[in-house]
Length: 140
Image (cartoon, rainbow, N blue to C red; front, top):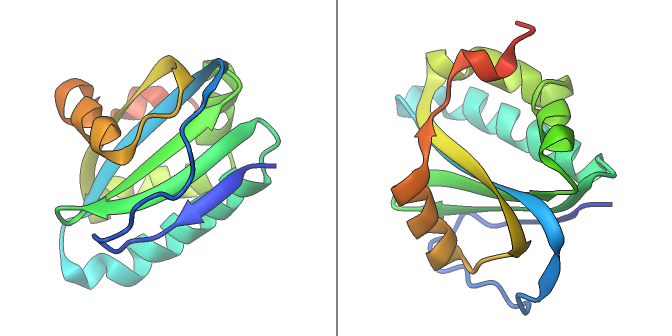
């Protein structure tokens, strides 16, 4: 089962050691609401998507943190294929359908042998993140 930690405070500091792991697929996203009026809908989808990740047996880790007003997620999957299966199903699929109406953002994924600390993950996101494109969702 997926280890989930969700804390949206800027003062959050993870209290676990980042150990080396077998090569897995790390996904880092950053999303921002287009307007504060979208907050209820945004958080409804966010919470349901995180719960879905928590239940997914292929998810090793799902954590969230807000940095500079942007809601970030970092998830670790057994493989890219399994991450894409999650992305295209259930609550996350519903969230991706409404996302263009309520938010902006981007994400990226890489094969990784460790979970980076948030400052490193955020820097990777800034340097390598790409716009979230509907083509990723194929089946819509």
